[in-house]
Image (cartoon, rainbow, N blue to C red; front, side, top):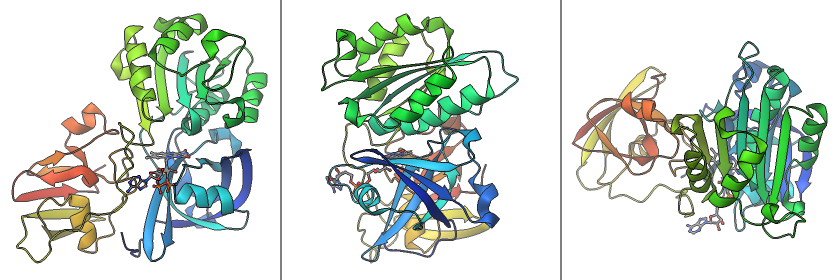
Length: 363
Ligand SMILES: Cc1cc2nc3c(=O)[nH]c(=O)nc-3n(C[C@H](O)[C@H](O)[C@H](O)COP(=O)(O)OP(=O)(O)OC[C@H]3O[C@@H](n4cnc5c(N)ncnc54)[C@H](O)[C@@H]3O)c2cc1C
């Protein structure tokens, strides 16, 4: 995707870069004073950054790892082998740099409620999937004084554990309300149950010893391909209703790389359909080429539409279909109620007929 001028991004100053592991950093960011309000977040949300490399715009999302009461905006970035943005960030980001970011987005997470009755929240994370889960845990423990957080966290080795110190501090501060169990797949542990992959069998074996499954109010799962499926299967078998199981994915199911670019379409052929797109109160009719998504057609027409992962995992490009219908190739982020209400991920949506009306402003 070529770089286009977008008014959705704000310059955030990097104030700290902390090395979490050999391959991961925590980046603390300061929004400009006039945009500070826009960067208030709900624990579990992510920021989308943009970077232009050789004239091409990259957008990548990173979950906020800071708790609500830390007074900081912080994300955790782990290097992906062969990855472009993550490798650059881990190797080169330093205090004083400026990153362009969109305000927090995403529906995975939980806003603590100090008036809520005491509850137990479960987190299951692997690798960099800890970032949103840490924010949820820290915020819950700080704001709901009688609620508990139980965390199962899988990594290859102890050296790969991100936010180890932050997790230990949480444990020290909330000894009787925070439990964390580390499972390591490539390092021997004195307890056999803590050595291996965090798969369905291991989750089912470990969890009842930590918390009676019936006491789990909500479960938040985040990690690489396979974790969501394994953990959902285990939790369902333990009787936790699907509506209380929340999943955030960083990569599409199956582990394929997210498609980072818009496909090349034949723009000399007559349009296959028309999309009427409303954004920031302005409606435009744009031609759609055969096989093109609503997002790509709008971007091709020069609209400053919001987008990030292009793989159906984040919900940055969410909009509401108000006329006509679309077919969505993949959806890893919209909830059933959103689908029923007509919301779609426009990066995955192709019209079923020759016309579709889509509203990005619909809340
Ligand atoms: C909602 C959300 C929240 C996220 N939060 C976090 C977070 O908190 N922390 C974190 O570390 N990450 C997070 N991610 C993942 C992050 O956004 C990036 O996807 C990740 O850092 C990889 O980006 P990259 O530019 O480094 O890799 P890319 O350059 O996009 O490549 C990713 C991988 O795919 C391979 N690849 C790329 N293109 C192809 C191709 N055409 N064919 C085959 N393979 C290819 C690369 O070799 C590499 O292994 C999140 C993602 C989402 C959707």
